[in-house]
Image (cartoon, rainbow, N blue to C red; front, side, top):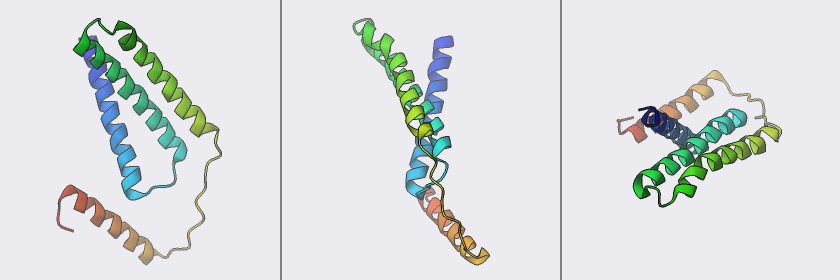
Length: 122
């Protein structure tokens, strides 16, 4: 039961991390690099650890070394993502001189784009 809970928790982390990465790509968000690095590091750990769990479930003990090493590899990959992105200087967006009406227009465009992806009429 504990192993199943770990798998489910890693699956939830993977799904939310992949959704977060997808939203970054869709909406072109450029700020929050450090926060994104932390989330994507945890996502890599969860995905690779679940792949190790699935390898053990599908192939049994035939690939015991691979299924045992994949969670450790996941932590190493997560650490590499964190180290790479957290040691970089954070990129600052230039100050915006937008008026309130321009900001509302941009927000309306984002809402329309989100409604389009959700299949609702804009």
